[in-house]
Image (tube, rainbow, N blue to C red; front, side, top):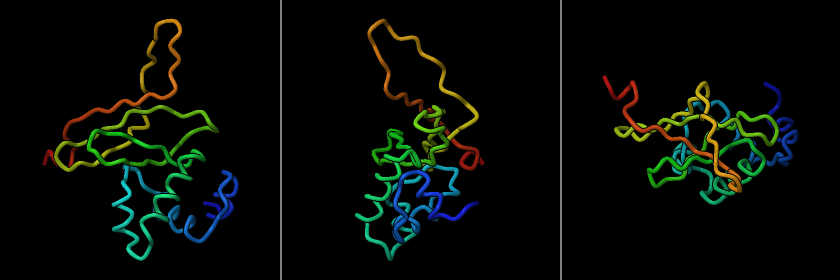
Length: 134
């Protein structure tokens, strides 16, 4: 992978030390994560700095937010093309609480009545993940 600073700059994010540390912590994640997950991983970093960085990454389409019904905002790597979000299905395990991005499964097209314009679509499947079924 290219240099983290260059990657952030290419996405319109000024590469500060905090932003590069947060990106390094999230760039290879395949499961969704919360602010508290990152706090545990990065105890030396201030909570508000992590939160502001996550919000910035969302604004620049590096991450997307997931409301999986757990009451905790979660984030997932955004595998989008420019500003076009590739809407995929998320799976939340009711046992362990982890949320997975199922990027190979696309949200089906919903034909809305005339005059309705969708701006965002979330599709959450809830159940038990393979690790919890054991």
